[in-house]
Length: 275
Image (cartoon, rainbow, N blue to C red):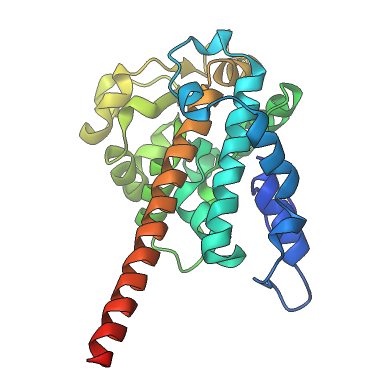
């Protein structure tokens, strides 16, 4: 996802370059020459293979060449460039951050288990860099004062490919987290059991966690680094890019239709005024 900076964290390389050009003491300036940021991108795109065909390949992810993911990243940035031309930088950054960007991992844990949660976050980011991936890890730190907490968790779960839950009695005591977990897509959940728990210990709405293939931290064989590496090894980075591209194409089509409808409406009004 490109490097992060303080003013524009975790944007794609294209948006980051655009944002860095646009950043000034007064904030974002939308009137940026596209020639400053897009020419090499479009030149490379003309040489690349058909992206739609590439996106729909049903090959196993282990056999996908790295060039495929590079081309998908290129296609994503070209779509971002098209969106930028339509609505400007500030709105493009806003839409990408709120609607398009997919998070790799969402960590959920009770406040009492924060130490392990933060360590796991750091391990995920560190091990991913060793594998030449930049991953987006979200969690309780994304809930800020004034937020509607349930809405934040819903947004984070919807935009995250994998949800890792640190399961403990402390988690069961948090009614809000319990409610939010119950509303999430359980197919994305990997539980990590921090203590030995009996079936009767689980709240009824979280009984599904007992049926998921999880890891036992209290087991002598538990190793955080091995667990993190396994998560990354089995993560489908190809599908992650495809999901972003599909959402981005839908967003771009919506903006195109909106622009066309406004143009038609203005033309109709102009014609009626003449008569």
